[in-house]
Length: 436
Ligand code: ASP
Image (cartoon, rainbow, N blue to C red; front, side, top):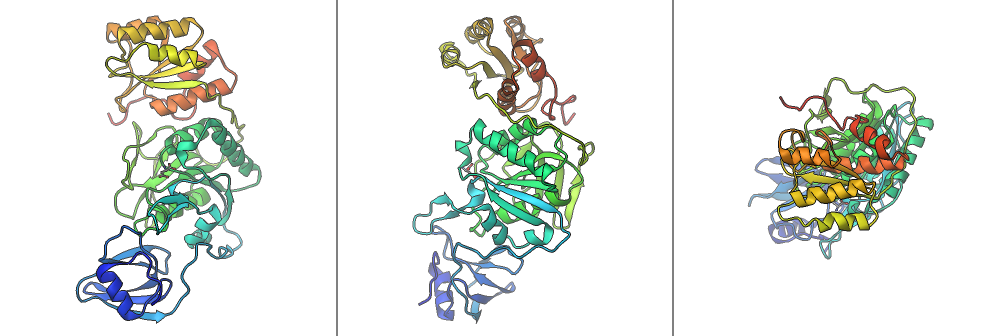
C-alpha cells in the first residue's frame, strides 16, 4: 500500500480503495462537485472525514467526504519531500522583493509522528511552496535566523533593521519579513522606529497555522505581503495577516499600532486606535488608507536598541518592591501599564517617584488597550505627574517598551529622551482617538 500519512477512517478507506498515495494527482467526486489536485499528507490529529488536495493554484483545500464520495488516481506522483524544487525563474522586468526568513509558524511544519510544530522551512522553500510568488515579483529569499518569535531580542531587531535598510541601496522594491506571530507587533514597532522614513514598503508577515496544514493562512498572507512589497504605492513598516476567518482577505496594519489579540484565530491581529492601512483581496489591493507615506525620499536608519527597559503591568496589591527590583536589575526606564486613564496605587506611585529621582525614566500607558492616558483627571494621576511619570498618550504598551529601548539606543538620555518619547516618530501617537 502506498503512503497515506495522517489519513484515517473513511478518508483512508476511500484513498486506499482507489490505490492512491501521497503525491498522486487524484480526482475526488462528491455531491458538491469534482476537484482535482495533488494528495498531501494530513496533520496527525486531523479527523477521518477530510481529504486534503493541493490545487494547481498552490492553495490547499480540505474536502469533506459524504458517503458517496469517489476517488480516482489520475497520475502517480512522488511523495512530496520537504525539499521543494528551486523556484521557477521569475520573468524579467518584475519588481524585486527581498524575503527575509526569521522563523516562526509560517516557517514551520508539523512533525507527522508527534504532531508538534517545529521551524523547518526556509524563506527559499516558502517561495517554492507558494508558486504564485514568482509571478508577482522576482523574489530573493534569505534566511536571517530561525527562531520562534518569543526568543527575539533587540539584537535580532538590529540585524533585521540593518538588512532591510541595505535592501534600499540594493534597489529592491520592497522587503517581506516572515516572522512568528507572538512578538510580531514588537518587531514591527522596532522596525518602524529603526527604519522611520524608509522609502520602500517593509512587510512583516506571519501565520497562525503552519504552511503544510490545509487551513494554513501562510499562502494568502505571503501572496498579499509580496504583492504590496512589490507594487504597493506606499512605504513604511506594516504587518500583513488575515482580515477575517475566511481565507480571502489580508489586512495591513501600521507597524506601531498593531496587536495580537487572539491566541489561535487566523484573524488574530488588529489595528488599535487607527484605521487599517490597507486591505488585500482576491482582486489585489482593495483599499488603501489616506495619508500613507508615498514611496521615495532619503532616509537614515537608526537600528540600535538598548534593552535596559522594563514593562510592568500594575495590578491591585502590586508590591512596590517590584519597581525596586526592576531598578536593582539595572533598567534605565520603566513603562508602567496602569489602570484606566493611567493609574497605580499610592505605594507603586511613590516607588516610581524614587526611581525617577535616582535618574530613571518612567512612562505611563494604559492596560485599557483603546483610548488615551490622562493624568490630569484624578489626584492619583496628578501625583504621578508630580513625581515625574510621563504619560504616553495613546501609545500601545508594547510599542512604548520598544520605543524606550530605541530612544536609549540613539544615545538620548534625560530630557532629550523624554522629548523623543513624547514626539510622534512613526505613527505611534495619534492626534485624534479613532473611531470618534
Ligand atoms: N510561537 C510562535 C512564534 O511566535 C507562534 C507563531 O509563529 O505564530 O514564533
